[in-house]
Image (cartoon, rainbow, N blue to C red; front, side, top):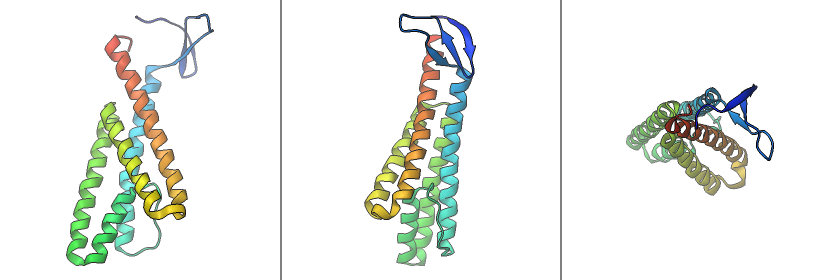
Length: 170
């Protein structure tokens, strides 16, 4: 295949005309940018989850919807079970959030598996939120779905860029 672009339109190039008309194809720089912005969503999710745990520890009645609901549940169970289990819950949450941050780092390097894993984790977290919070958590569910959408866009962009790299079109 080679370089077959004939003109640039914004953040996409128009390939040669086909029977159906002109086809817009995103530039590689656009694909890389989308994938890296998606990785930043992972960083924000991990960071806001840590803030939620901090707020829960000091019994502040405010929580952010973007964070992982799993981390809040683990901490709440540990906190209700006593001081020793509170620290165990903090350790479990620290491991979970660190793992999410590692996924963010790998997603930033355009690794599709990391974006896929982040999507799976957020999807499971959303299902857990629906199951435990029900209709009261509908706002958080919508925000979780927006996060999943942007993680998916980043995963698709990284996948397309990797395919172009393998084909020699990058």
